Amino acid sequence: MMTRHSIRVRLTAWYAGLTLVALIVMASSVILLVRHSVTRAVEERLSAHHDGLERFANALEVSLPADEVRDELREYAAGAVGGAFFELATSEGANLAHPDVSGWDAAIASLRPTSPSPRATAIDFLIGDAPYRASTRALTIHGASAQSIVAVALGPTDAALASVQRMLFWLLPLMSLIAAACGYVVSGRALRPVDRLTQAAQTINVENLHQRLDVPPAPDELQRLAVTFNGMLDRLQEGVGNIARFTSEASHELRTPVALVRTTAELALRRDRSPEEYQDALTDIHTQSREMSDLVDDLLTMARADAGVEPPPETVVDLGAVAAAFAASWRATSRFNLVRDDDPIMIRAEARQVQRLLSIVCENATKYGPEDGEVCVRLRAENGRAVIDVEDDGIGVAAGDLPRVFERFYRGARARAGEATGSGLGLSIAKVIAERHGGQIMLSSPIRALDGRATSARGTRVTITFPLATPDVTTAPHTRPAQ
Image (cartoon, rainbow, N blue to C red; front, side, top):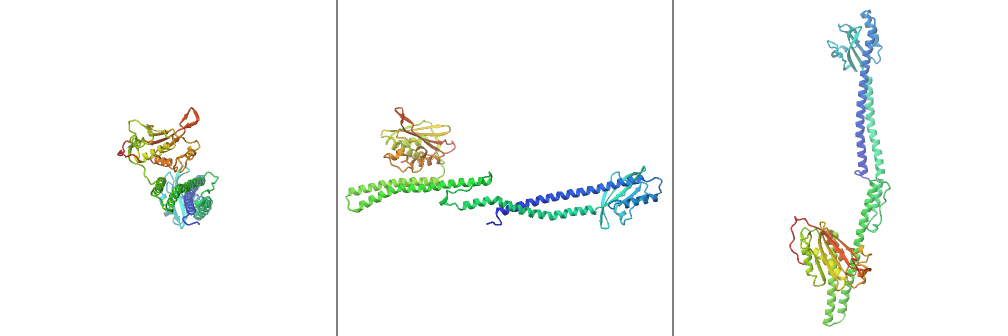
């Protein structure tokens, strides 16, 4: 529903206001132009009367008596077009023509200099209630100097100017109203696709996030708006789908250990048992409870990462020292080799988180490798980044599983077919830790072939990179190995 503050009303108001300003400027320009034109026309009439009076006076015979000259000039003035008044005087002061108009002498007194000026000057005055403009000019009549004063009526020109002003006075609001009406209609047509997009967006909710807005065919702002909205809906649908899938998979992972704990407890309580049987039952319950606890911790880590509540690390650690501390706890459980330079590799990170990342990757390498297999960790600095390569000679990852190994709860076909257990969250958590520290993690497999045959290729390489830290950050103290 349209309100007085709607975009359509505001567009209409702006359109009408700008149109009114433009019309006022145009009207002012028209008035100035008309005023200039009528003023120039009056001056041209005055000049033409001066010229005509000079020609007429020179056409008279020199021998005519002064009274006859005055009569001829009076007749000439009476026949002048537009009701002009003439005054003609010789340099000796003889008055050859003088209008019989009350107040004439007082009105043109300023135009009678003691010596005639070669340039005409003009004044405006009133005779009765009628406006006039008079000008003076120096003439030459039969070789003698003379001065002429001509006055023409300004009534017609003033009336024409007033008529133009009245017309513009009524035309401006009329044109403004027409512009406002046109602006209201045009803005309504222009905003109609926005209304359709709004109505379509209002029908989309969590239950039908698959719906999309219709994209207008014209490549304009509305098309970009619709494309942007559809992109936002794509991200929302993906996010909601991830949440639903995450909840479903987490419930599925928790269902098995919870069922085992419940079943074990119910069987143990069904009848009296020996202490050894109770101990075996409690051991099974403890094992399943620990798996559930680990899974809940992993889910909490993923939830905190999704919420973005953990700030980026501020301390700087030596990656070589962190890896060496981690290696001390792993050499006793597997064939573990750490290859690094003596030079420190400083990164901005939390030591415990880096050790947990290494633990996840190395646990996978050990879990899916042979009993006598080897896990090799290599550290180096390259192109402004710290690089960790973790290689194993295990079963490797199938080519079809490589694009999905970092997805939550995903386990490859080879992992599902083996005896190794897990929730499928390990590499997802490793990716979260790496990205939180501004790094990246990549996996490639296979990395070697046995007996020169591609079909027997095996082994996996996980490459983790971190940006090297700037030297102006305080180095963190030594951290104990992750347990």
